[in-house]
Length: 323
Ligand SMILES: C[S@@+](CC[C@H](N)C(=O)[O-])C[C@H]1O[C@@H](n2cnc3c(N)ncnc32)[C@H](O)[C@@H]1O
Image 1: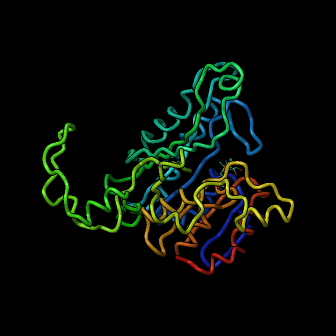
Image 2 (image 1 turned 120 degrees about the horizontal axis):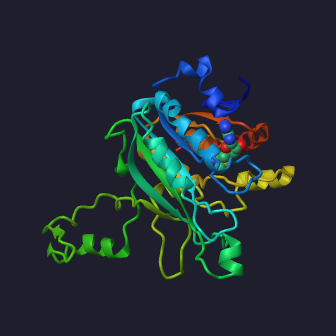
């Protein structure tokens, strides 16, 4: 099993995940992975440069990964899988494949998994797609989000939402500072106590919706504080990774996970020294975020060409300032 990169905090292997995870040296790590965080090749209806399968072939392959992932996981570990939408070939109809893939994965009889929570990652700057129906015929809206499915082996996987607080809104800051608000029952039937909102907890609780950039200048995005240390969206072409890829004439991986997204789940669901695995690592966004947050990491990808991008990430001077 070719080991392509080794750092103090992790290792990057080349090979198909279904083979690598069955290798004896990986089998030794059974039950030790605290988080599997990954964006697999999406079920697309036309082939992209990073090797997607189509239709039923995809469904069967993806479903078989469930027991493999589950056996690597610690009992209180989590799996977070990012899946985008896909569309039926030549039809303005959304494909059921991503949902079927998720359902088959979670309900695989040998895996004993359950869905913990769904997250939506909304990208207001997403280019209009599917172009034929959105920009040419103008009969569909822009497909502008991906979903992240948080899955686990137990109902209470390790998690702490105190670690991923968002800044308070100006209204909430005012309320805390003045100590005045209307207690009582809301139309939604929620009962707000006399003191419920008076304690300063350092920030508000994260939502299961990420908005990658401001929708408009009047409305501030309040992403969890962890994003202050990581650029959240991939549109920043001036970071160390993008600059170095450009200098070396390397095209950055076309489907990188937003760094802030990786950082959010690592901080939320693991502790320092925990082990984070990305079985579809590509440029190794997950491994880099894990290292910066003092976690150990393992990466796997079928394509050797992406390892160079992981090496570039690990030359980033920001890595010396781990958080
Ligand atoms: C969506 S990309 C992941 C990108 C990554 N999250 C990043 O931030 O750079 C999916 C990756 O899965 C890899 N891949 C496809 N089939 C695979 C397989 N059977 N085993 C391992 N990797 C595979 C592709 O080479 C591709 O790099």
